Image 1 (tube, one colour):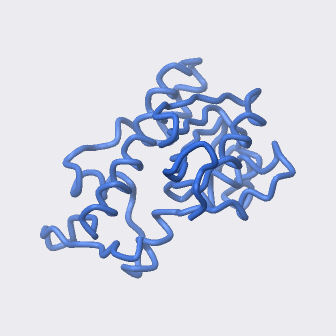
Image 2 (spheres, one colour):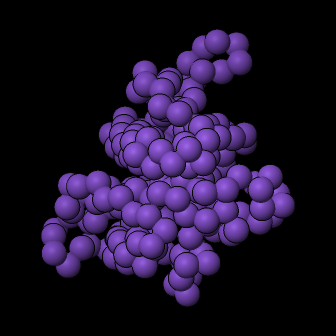
Image 3 (cartoon, helix red, strand yellow):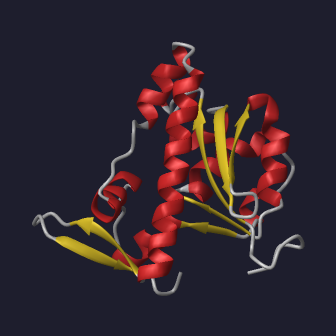
Amino acid sequence: MRQSPNSSNPNIVYFDLETQKSASEVGGWKNIHLMRLAVGVTYSTVSGRYETFFEEDADALVDELSGADLVVGFNVKRFDYTVLSPYTAVPLKRLPTFDMQEHVTRTLGFRLSLNALARATLNEAKSADGMQSLRWWKAGRVDLIMEYCRKDVEITRRLHEYAREHGHLLYDSRDGRKRRVNTLHW
């Protein structure tokens, strides 16, 4: 990992975004790039602050991500970067990125949601979901989308920190037992 020029610690930027449109509104999941940015939130380990970005701030969001030593997100490569790609010529998928969902899926052989990991590992649930965020968008409740997106970034950050400290994350298996996802390679 590169070291941030302003700090002896790497600048890890945790990132999530919410969209204006659903998959069904843009002709399916093959058209993620048409969903449009509603709200993006980052947390930088160098600044120690959350930042909120709207569609008109897409350039600033891309600058924030491009300045990171590492971007960490959940399904960020497939979804978030694809939503953001129409706003920039920067090849986002080339940024140094750790996609937690990608690594969990590779380790286990099946997908888990951010909420499943948060419930089992942190004993905490997400505050909403993407469909609720879309309903808030249509109702003009951007304030609620901002809170929800920020909470997802916070959960992602806390899961990543837990994984690095403990060498695993937890999830509830179908038989009701807590199981570990090995994260020693993180």
